[in-house]
Image (cartoon, rainbow, N blue to C red; front, side):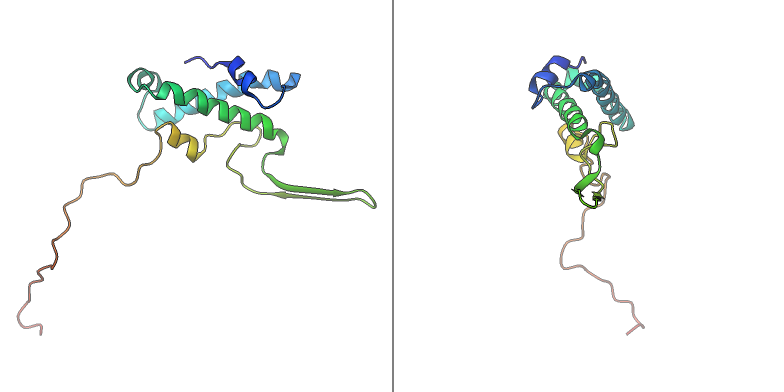
Length: 145
C-alpha cells in the first residue's frame, strides 16, 4: 500500500517547514513498517488483509497520518509534560512524562491505533469447559464430618 504523502501534507494543521517536509516521507515509511511488523507479529499479513478486509484500506491511511502528525508536531519535545523558564536570574524547569502519543523523535503505534487496525488483544483466548450449574453438588465424604 502506497502512503499518500500529499494527503498528509494537505491535512497537516499548518504549513510544513522544509526540514519537516524531508522527515515526512521517512516517518510515513517508518509508520508503514511498524504496522506491517505488528501484523506479522500476530501471524497476519497486511497486504492480504487489505484485499480481504474492506475497512482496513480506510483505517491504515488514517493510522499512518496520525502517527506521522504526532511525530512531527511533537518533534524534539517528545516526553515533555511541562516546561517553564524565568529570565532574571535565570531558572529553567522541564517535567518529563512517559507519553504514548509519540516515541522519542519517531512514530509510535499506540494501543488506540492498534485497536483501529484490528490488532487489539481482544481478551483471553482459549477453550474452556462450561461453568458448573448452580447449586453445585459437592459430594460428602463419609468419615470427615
